[in-house]
Amino acid sequence: FCLFSQDLPQNIHLLMYIGVMSLLRPLLLDVVPTIQQTAALALGRLANYNDDLAEAVVKGDILPQLVYSLAEQNRFYKKAAAFVLRAVGKHSPQLAQAIVDCGALDTLVICLEDFDPGVKEAAAWALGYIARHNAELSQAVVDAGAVPLLVLCIQEPEIALKRIAASALSDISKHSPELAQTVVDAGAIAHLAQMILNPDAKLKRQVLSALSQIAKHSVDLAEMGVEAEIFPVVLTCLKDSDEYVKKNAATLIREIAKHTPELSQLIVNAGGVAAVIDCIGNCKGNVRLPGIMMLGYVAAHSENLAMAVIISKGVPQLSICLSEEREDHIKAAAAWALGQIGRHTPEHARAVAVTNVLPLLLSLYMETESSEDLQVKTKKALKNILQKCTYLPALEPLLHDAPPNILKHVVGQFSKVLPHDSKARRLFVTTGGLKKVQEIKAEPGSLLQEYINTINNCYPEEIVR
Image (tube, rainbow, N blue to C red; front, side):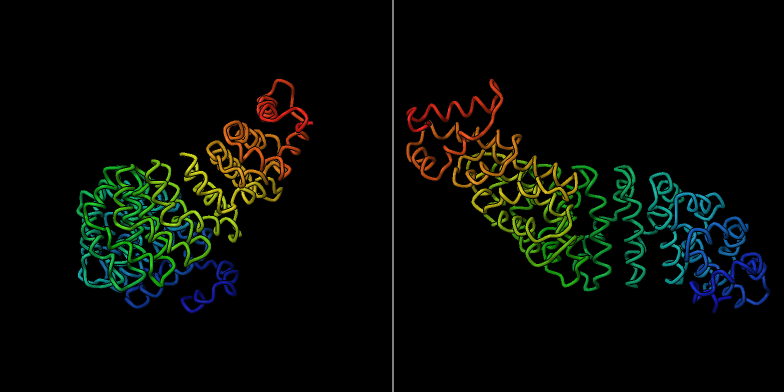
């Protein structure tokens, strides 16, 4: 059975046909330990394959026997039994709940204190897979006393155990501030922060993920990460050769930056904005996403913070993301971030507009193949930037292409600037802008018509005609 289960796609129907679960269950009680362990390993491989087989393990009344033996048997069996529980629990909250209902959590927590690091690792893995589904299952893992022991596990010398324990703490923390606080109260942050510079990339991924899941919930929890002196150390991870380390580091910085202007300013002072912009320039696709969003969050807080993004040359980099990325959700994030930068003052709007990004935003908004979210984000970004933009050369191309709901904002900006700028008025005639305004069909009495009238009143009647 164990050999068959190694090649499941080919043998699955045969194993199901012969009723493999009912045949394996008595082997868990065999007098020969090796047979018990091999039977458990086969069950784990079957349950790991898909949720139907995992369900069959539950319905075959196999879990109670595994839990009972988990407390009694040797380390080889414990690892195999914990593997089965993990394989069953990973598929759905319902299957994870079945593991909780059969009393497995207390036994798995006891295994976290086992002398053998492999047993600890297998138990931590199972607990993490149960906790990741929802807050209720995560709370059950906490109530069983797992968190303090997982914090001890991340201090063990074995890298594999550190990885899995950090991953489990991340899975527990992600659901609510209360669960994250439980992890913090067990002293996890200080130990996680010390491992940010560990040379093992897979461990760094999990450590950064756990710190992110804690920091995301509240200002207080984010500040605890900062107080553990993760800056400027975490910025080195943005240059890591491992893409997931980069992404998770940017996610951690984003989760801290989003809360308050003070936290964002601290990141700016540590060189975090420039480091994130460099990171975005050196990677592609979803690895860029948290960095793009981080820049948007920082810029959203205040004029000064948005200017810090501009000074660090964030706008050209976001424009590149907007033009070269293929995924709509990444383009949408870049559009949103550009809108957050440009919405503050005419100076901010000009810094965005001079990169020639406005026509690109417009084309993405009007593109029928753009997702609804991308259309919403580009429209909002255009509106935010246009309402502050007084740099007319960047606005003029939009006069020819923009639909009425965007055109209204474009013409509105011309109506604000032209009455007070004689040079701009002359240019507006010679570039054909005034001619274009005469071609616009506006509803009488509408805001757009008012803007057009204001522009026309800047010129002698014969020029308008």
